[in-house]
Structures are given as C-alpha cells and as structure tokens.
Length: 71
Image (cartoon, rainbow, N blue to C red; front, side, top):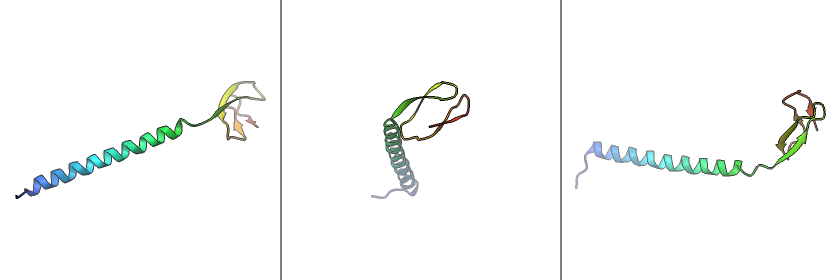
C-alpha cells in the first residue's frame, strides 16, 4: 500500500501536536495540584495591625500596607 508524502507529513504533524498537547495538559495538572498544598498562617502586622495570610515557611514578611518587615 502506497501512502502519499503529503498524507504522511499530515499524520506525523497531527500526532506530534497531539502528544505535545497531552504532555502540556499533564504538566499543568501537576502544577495546579502542587499549588493547592500551600499552608498559610494568619499574621498581624506589628506596626499597623493589619492582618494577612502568609506561607507558614516564611520567617520574615513585608507588610503590603505599611512596608514594615515583620517576624
């Protein structure tokens, strides 16, 4: 059975695009799943008394309102 060259190129290109789409979808799914596991803790600014939620791993953080560094 003979396959024309243009049909071969079309099938090859379509399969490469499909594989790339599936790999990108899997990678985005993993990234979203990892972002959901971030633990936040409630902190109050020592200067202006504003309350923010920051990652629990942060030792120091900067208040967005007054720009003071808090521990």
